[in-house]
Picture (cartoon, rainbow, N blue to C red):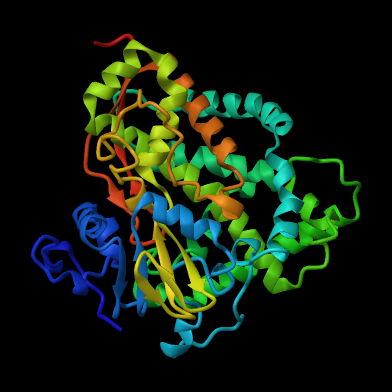
Length: 431
């Protein structure tokens, strides 16, 4: 297993290194925003690329838009059963890590028919009638958050807006006590951390991670018990939906915790990091910010472009169920196949001017940030609605959200996100 690269100065030159030695799994690539040239070269020269050695073991990289779509559609050959990230839980055994709880499972890491049955139990939370009911609540929360922010003073947008809005939404979706909502954020961050590799929450230990997940399980089990004994009359409460559905009402603790963390992470990291990523993208592309100020009607399309540009989950992984030839490459049974969404969204053979952030792009929803096929993100419309409402209210109040320092990014090769985005708000009354 390859050693961890500690800083960007140790990265090999993407233009001159032997392509067979290219490893795009290093978290430093995302954390230092250095990933683009590595994937550009893979798309051009070796779009289905085998990395024989990495800190995560051997894996295939699928880097082009249409190839990712083909893998997503073929769940019989490319299974989700083993895991959905490049990291194998079984790798902890190889590292000698002792765990109190064994592997957890969730419906995203399952194949049909179990996947379909369990996903169906909760997907009703985001049907159009429920989204319509939620929009007013989201708008009022956005208004409250934006009106509480300081003007012309530096603050961390991630903490004050991105986390606050998404955490309040999570509390609503679980009918979770609002005063305890920050537990949801912490559980989300902890669930996607790998303490042994220094990935995720800084300074987190394996023991602290397991304690947090046990707290999540215990807390949610108590709420679950209450919901199971109440009429199933709340159609925007995920716990109630799980408790009253035949496919999910008798989940064991591992399955319950797995589905909880899936829903918490899915509702937190993607929207939260797109909220931050949109502010960064507009500051990096001031001509697009000018377009937005001139024509706020561009907001719906801009939201989709933000989600494409940010690509908050960098990849999804599948496991080959049998030997299979794909694009001339011989993939073996048991091989990891990693679909790099961040690369597919930069594929200029499918997306015109893919390396540019364009808020008036034609067909802006043509991206792979939400995945495709049976595993397409269940909450994609809710995420888009939160971003749309947020930017509608931002444009009512502020001339500019001005970036006043460098963003700090999460150490991860799965979550493409931010811990700090220093900004100042310039109100409309100022030039």
